[in-house]
Every structure is written in structure tokens, then in C-alpha cells.
Image (cartoon, rainbow, N blue to C red):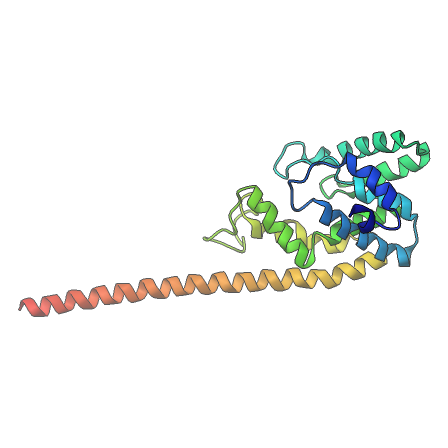
Length: 243
């Protein structure tokens, strides 16, 4: 199947699959790699770039996975780049091409905070971040938060107006703390255009979510008020009956 997913570089994909981590993280599985590859192809069609370098970068960009709440998270891209260099060296790739792939992988990560230096690096970063926004990005956000045993949102203050954002505790906090910021950082014109379309889905979901939870809170308050009123009425009735 992997040969079809990464055509026309199916043979390379079939070889590199042995360097990928075992399935376990549904937000960084083979379907994520395929979506990133499709994004990269779409961007490359307009921006140019070496497709073989791109497919290798896409396939290996998450070859070392570190949990989101791990102290090693900021080093994940560097670890993946090192493993990618080893894998491509085993295949006899020239050092210069290996260097382009490893640099692209090291700079793709948001937590690494690096600016890609090559066109392939810029495309990889954009292609990967496109999968973090839009409807798929929303699903991946809540999936990952569930793996971290996070709550959906803070019941006392869902929008974090006065409290500090904490996306390790609350999934909804990940939207303003990271996801909303991604669109402004895209490296290619094509990627930026695609990102703007997906960003709207984030905003629509976030505002809709807030409306629903605030509506639930009002309903809860109304129920409490009704219960209090009923209790007061019953007390008055008992007093009258006792006269």
C-alpha cells in the first residue's frame, strides 16, 4: 500500500518504511505522512523543488516520535534528522542530498523555532503545518489532548480571558496558544493561501464551541435558579399550611 500512497516514489517509500516508528500515535501515523505528502506535492507544483528530496523529508520527518508533554519535545526534530541521515546513508545517498533532507526535517518543527533554509525545507514545514489546521487539525488536536489525559476546556473560564493559557490541561487552549498562530508563519505563497482556507475552519469551530459551552452554562444557571425558586415557593406553602 505504501508504494501507491507515495507514488511515483513507491520503491523509496517501501525502503524507508522500515525506519518509521511502529503505529501507535494516530496523529502521526501513515495517514498523516500521506496527507503531508499530498500537501507537499500541491505546493511543489506551484513553487518548484526536488520531489525526491521532499518525499524523503516527508517520510522521515517524524521517524523519532516524542510525546507532546515530554521534556525532550523540543529535540524531537533533531533526533529525527539524525536518524534520517543514518537511513539515507545506508541507501548510499550523496552527503549533499542527505544534508538537504536533514536540514528540512530539523527546521520543520514548531517547537524547534527554526527557519528553513532550502526550498524543500520551506515546503516541508508548510505541508506539515497544513495538517495541523483545518478540520483534520482540529481532530488531531483533540486526539492528542486525549492521549495526554487533558480536559476539553476549563469550565470556569473556557476562553482564558484572565487566566493563563494551559494547553497541556485544556485542549481548547491549544487553539489560541498555537493553532491560530500558525497561519501567519507559512514560508511559501502557495502554502499561505492553502492555510488561510483552513484557518477559517479553526475560527468557526472555536467560536461555535464557545457558544455551545456558554449556552450550557446559562442553562445550568437557569436550572439552579428554577430549583431555588421552587424551594422558596414550597417553604412559603408549608408556612401557610402550618397556620
